[in-house]
Image (tube, rainbow, N blue to C red):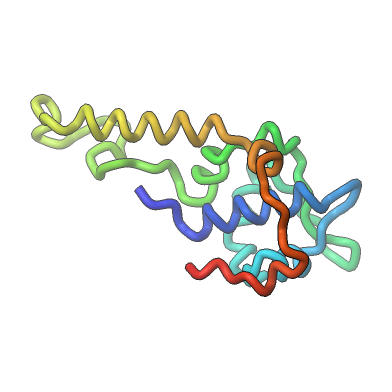
Length: 149
């Protein structure tokens, strides 16, 4: 159960947009520079967010991104599912029906199911707005602070 860079970067991108959009669109190049994400890579995860109605995209000189949904209504679970697909603790939980030959008597299965449910519930409980509200002051030049991963 690993959240990919797409999921993490999409979250950072959406928070940046929420904090900077005001009444307009936030230029893609500005988000990319502040978050140190290439514009090309951002395009890999903006389409599903736009298709879901979370992200508005406008092309052209006055274009950019904006949230179409209030930040307090966008959960980390939605972002991760849209960018990575649902998270699963173990392979046998990836399908709607567990087809593992051992699932009827597997001693560890309840633990993996519980872990998966706990992660799902937690990610559904955290919104972009909550992350914004609890954020620490940002340095003036975020470009000087690479994520490292």
